[in-house]
Amino acid sequence: MAQELVLDQADVQEEFFARGWTDGLPVVPPTGDLVGAMLDHAGVVAGDIVGTVPERSREVTAEKAAVNAVMAGCRPEYFPVVLAGLSAMFDPRFGCHTVVTSTGGAALCAVVSGPLTAELGFNSDRNALGPGNRANATVGRALRLVAMNVLGARSDSLDGSSLGHPGKFTMVIAEEPPPEGWPPLRVELGHGPGDTTVTVFPSEGPHQVANHLNGDPEGILLTFAAAMTNPATFGVGKKHQVLLVLGYEHRRILAEGGWTKQAVREFLAAHSRVTPEHLAAAGVLSEFTAQNDMTPDADGKLATVPGPDDIFLVTAGSAGAGWSAYIPNWAPAVHSVAVTRRVAAPGAGLPVV
Image 1 (cartoon, rainbow, N blue to C red):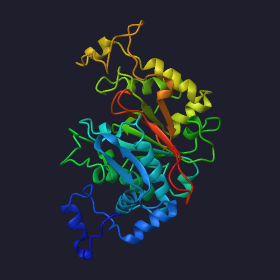
Image 2: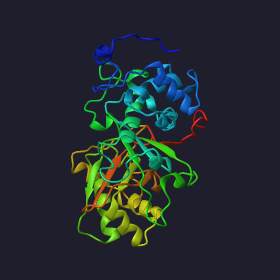
Image 3: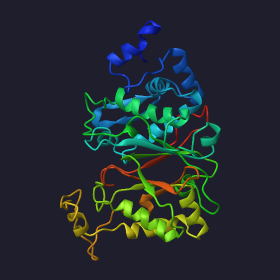
Image 4: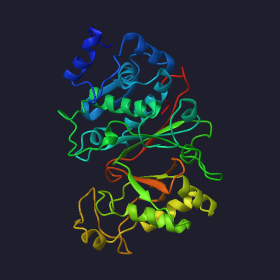
């Protein structure tokens, strides 16, 4: 059980800052009542194990998760979403230990798909990747505070980020219902239409994709392929996963043009293949190691994504001039991949793995 720290209200923020328990922003004091409300809403008890990181000999209990969710500003109703995100983080395929300590400085990007996005007030519309929404901001912040306070991944300790990026404060994307005929992300990943899922993706920051004038679906996709093959992105030619946020105009052009999501993925997987010369022209040298063997395939090219299914398509954002976003994984898939968990119903306990 957590130890109790008794402080005057006026001293709380300074004490938490002094102890390195914050992300640089003020926090909500995690009183026993507030932590208890989190646990009760999710139907978990303090000692329930949410997940472990064997490389650190660390385990995260429901109580520790609830403490950090309170500090992040979450409402109790958000806590099952936080627990699903943490469960995904602790899946060995995600590679949490490396993600939160690497020099690459990955965000813990969480994509929420399902009916709870509307019920809990997540923003999937205007400014979908920006500030101003409590659910988006605090759920993502809770994941990062757990990484800092429970796993020790702080800038003065185990977080080795050379630069990092603002998504490390919080990075949650709520899926807007896709155009007619397009399945939502959760269904594509094997879950039911009535489920809500959290897909945690270890990411670089968003790269905005602009195409304002071209109404041709293939023209839009070629713009995405150009973003995906920028040699300055670490995973280009190294088989990493990518997340594409399809903005209002772009998704409408593609869907109304008869393109399925699978056809989009297949086109982009093929058109994101690059030659070693493409990389060399930008000063990027090929690697020939056990983890990143960049020997070209028979066509003389290198795959940027392992396959079409490693391109995650999410619809979000409001009408504008024609904006989308490309979000690459921080490293090749051999190091880390996205993991999805279904959000448990209130009172149902921990997410089922």
